[in-house]
Amino acid sequence: MRLLQVLGLGRRASVIALGLGAASVALGLYAYIRADARADLKSEIEDVNDAAQLDAFRADLGYLECVDGGFLYDFGTGQCRRPAPGGR
Image 1 (cartoon, rainbow, N blue to C red):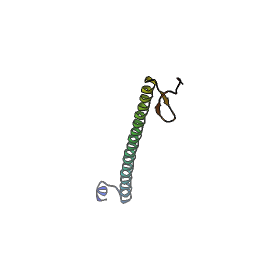
Image 2 (image 1 turned 60 degrees about the vertical axis):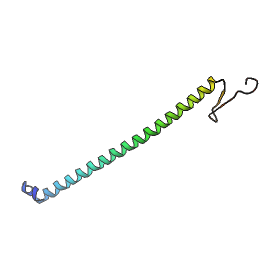
Image 3 (image 1 turned 60 degrees about the horizontal axis):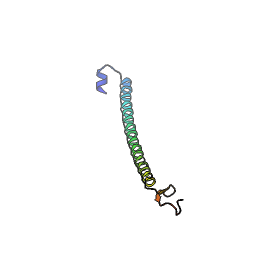
Image 4 (image 1 turned 90 degrees about the vertical axis):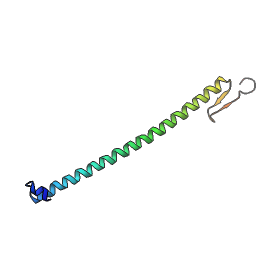
């Protein structure tokens, strides 16, 4: 308060200046926390997407290996099955 009074500001102006300074610090802290939380959420979503993409790639590879081997791929169970007797 004394610094602001030395600068020639009255008591009311000093209080307002300190209030504005405190509000700007609080707003900056809020923005920092929000940006940090947003980055964490984005990272978590990217990790889930990467895992899903890897699972899809593995499933596709399993399907291709099954069909290339002359077997039938059961999409319901996600497993490779041998052909039915008689070529069906």
